[in-house]
Image 1 (cartoon, rainbow, N blue to C red):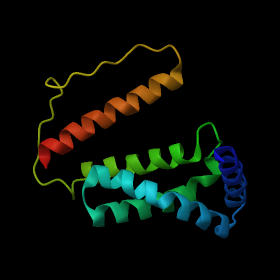
Image 2: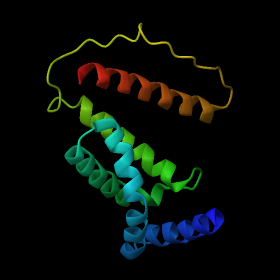
Image 3: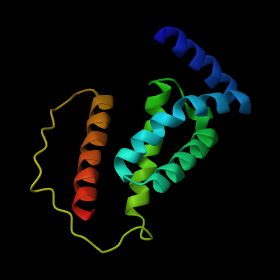
Image 4: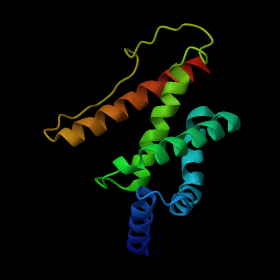
Length: 139
C-alpha cells in the first residue's frame, strides 16, 4: 500500500512540477494535516500553525520544480515548514524580549559522520533541539 502511495505521489509531484494546480491541490490536501500537526507541536497556537501551514504550501508551490526526489516528499515539505517556523520565532515582530540563549545546560550527543547528508541531517536535528529548548524557556 505504501509503495502505491509513493508511486501516486510521484505522478502528482511530476504533474505539479509541470504546473498542474489540481495535482498540487491533491498533494496539499493529503499532507496538510501532517504539516499542521508538526507546526502545532512547535507553536502550540492554532492561528500560528494555520498561518505557517499556509505559508509552507505557498512556498512548496513556488519551489516544487526544485524537488528532486532525493528524499520523501513529506520530508522535503516538513523541512520547509520547520524552517518557516524557526524564522517566525526569530523574527523581530514575534520576539517579546531579547533573550540570551545558552546551550551549556543542554547535553547533545552528536556522533561523527563521514557522509555529508548525515552531517546535514544531524545539524538540522541539533538546531531543532536548540530551537525547542529556547522556545520552551521563553514560553
